[in-house]
Length: 161
Image 1 (cartoon, rainbow, N blue to C red):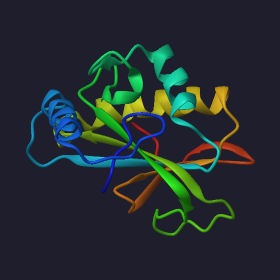
Image 2: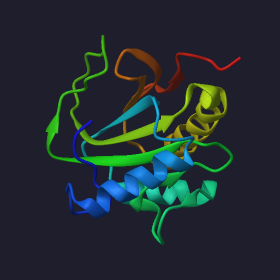
Image 3: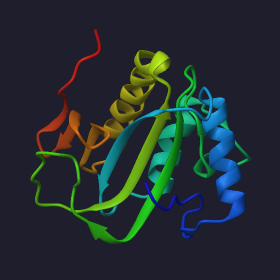
């Protein structure tokens, strides 16, 4: 995935960042093979916007600040951020949109926890869509679109049964 932003203005790869990611991954079910959901948010969305939404969901924190990464409440789903200083195109397969991505949030979980994790991710994006006007795309490893927030509102393309 590249570099993760654990602070609002820094994007770095350090041993402390690796240790934080490792702790989140271990809490999410181990360091083995994990699945990844990717939330690509339009330029203008900030880590603070996401942190304000996360604070309403009471996530289990790694460290003292929500934006340092952690687990979504009620599941074993770890999350992290990547801030794009120069906005990039949406990478989710098949998506052609007029906006560019400024913030990417990744969710990591084991296959055994997929339904619980998806429930928590959907809860997060629904609340985020209610609180903020930013457009976004949620995909499974950039391959399959699960949700799209655009000018028409939030569309959960892939429903959880």
